[in-house]
Image (tube, rainbow, N blue to C red; front, side, top):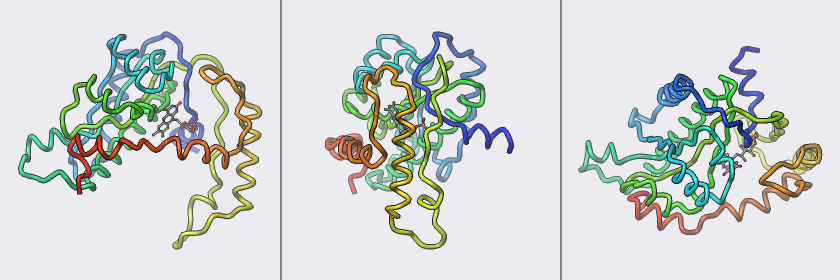
Length: 246
Ligand SMILES: Cc1cc2nc3c(=O)[nH]c(=O)nc-3n(C[C@H](O)[C@H](O)[C@H](O)COP(=O)(O)O)c2cc1C
């Protein structure tokens, strides 16, 4: 197995960091890897806001449901879908269509993943912060984002502290990858995976900010998190920023 495959297979989110900053060379390498990511029609509709001001970092942490690693990580980058640049160049194009949201979201996700992979390849670690969308309107204000720009995900990057968490099991291939036709949910395979996750959480030490051992399986996790993830203000917010009007 080559180094890239090995790296990808061993991914695990890191939520605990030492105080050591990244060097400029490391930051630059991560940025270059991210910036070379494929881009839909080369529209290049992603901007990254690097949060270096400690006060602002604290504010962003508070807005992102107080996840402490946002403040602790050496770097915190916010990936935004950014059609403002394109709009400046081609102001006559109607950007109301929802497809632009899909394009921007997809490109930002790909770019963020290349950034994380680049960081991991240098022995650094990180975690995404979808929590930046919890108070998206206020975040948009504090970052001074104009119309056609929306913050999608944050990325903490730093030197991992302590022991690396165990690799989190994923659904088996037969539940995720189908040949030619979609396959319905297989309850037996689901039960197996559920048990695997139960055991994973049972073995995993509880670390701040969490104080209670997670004893649930994956089914319970979905029940808890699916509903919690719906941010009912999102459509109104997107429309206000110029996205997804039709
Ligand atoms: C788009 C996205 C947003 C995420 N947001 C958060 C977050 O706000 N806080 C957090 O602790 N982890 C967040 N995560 C990390 C996931 O919880 C993590 O990837 C998942 O539990 C699998 O664990 P692993 O990455 O260690 O394999 C996010 C991941 C993704 C892809």
